[in-house]
Amino acid sequence: MSEQEPYDSRFTLPDVDAWPETEAGVILLGLEPDRLLAGLGFAALADDPAMVTQVVDQARHGVFAADLAGLAEAGVARWRALRPALAAVPGRPAVGALRQEWANSADLVAVAVPGTGPAALAYLTACWIRRDEIDRLAEGKEPDVLPEVAAG
Image (cartoon, rainbow, N blue to C red):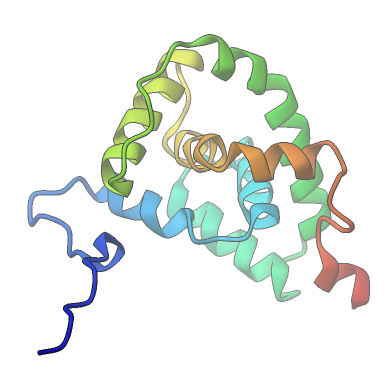
C-alpha cells in the first residue's frame, strides 16, 4: 500500500461565495516583488486593481509609455512612506490559509491607511504579506529591482 501524498492547500478551490477581492489578492501574491511595487506606484495615479495590473504588465513588455523602473521607484517611495503606519497597527497572527491571511492583512491595511482605494489596498496588502521581500527591495539589498529592464 502506498503512502498518501500530504494535503497541499495551495490548490484548494475557493468557496463559491468567496470575495472577488480575495481571489484577486491571491493572484497578486504570485507577482514578483518589483511588479508589486510598480503596481503600488501606479495605484497612486489610477486606483483600479485590474487597470493597474494591466498597465504594469504592459510597461514590463514595453507597450505602455510608463517606465516599469519608474513605477517601481514610485512604489518604493510610497511603501517607505506608509510602512511605519502599517507596522503600528496591531494585527492578528499569521494563519496557515492564504485566503484568511489575505483577509486579515487587508483589514490591517484598511485601518492603517484609511481612505485607500481598491488598487492601493490590494497592492499594499500584497506588499504587507510579503513585507520581508519588499523591505529588502526598498532598502536596495537586491542586486537589481528590475533585472530584465537593466539587461534590456
